[in-house]
Image (cartoon, rainbow, N blue to C red; front, side, top):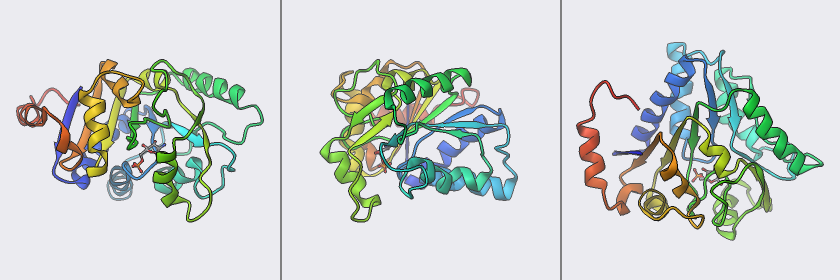
Length: 255
Ligand code: GLP
């Protein structure tokens, strides 16, 4: 696992955009996250598309998760959110995600797994971090081997995400890629910024591997890049070492 500490969320976004740009240029399959953490990276990719001609034509994308029971055209559905944040703005048309309105949710979950598998898997999976340590919507207690399925959100996540719903009730159930599903992506890139993430980040990166902190599953993956700002890094015990390693990173190494 490589931990990169940047001065600001914007710098974190630029680094994540560099990693994603490489994937886009290779015409590879992206795993996209919603939430506010990836926003600076997506803004930068949109800029590179508009100003530098970065072409998303050969790419396809899969979403991590979706609310159950709200239609795909609801402004807060993750299908709509990712189109608004990134894909519509860069001409990325092949975007798939779990269908939270399916009549048979377990069948849709199994079908989503199959759609990812048939596409050859995900090359780079971008991830945010819940303040309770969730990845996607895998709340504490999620099996580290879990597959796409229905989960119930914690009260903390309901409260964190209520800011997007302007008084409407936040759906209590979601379809999310499991931790086992996420772990099959070839490269995992976690972005976390702000002091509110510092506790969950320290638990995920330096705590025990445990279903109580779902993001700790990252420690079992052979290729993980964690990109955080100083505020999110505040509780990392080995922060000085991560800075030292990054300062001395060989040019040939890449991310
Ligand atoms: C949400 C999403 C996650 C996201 C996380 C953090 O509930 N399901 O995919 O990474 O919580 O969100 P934010 O980046 O807005 O802090």
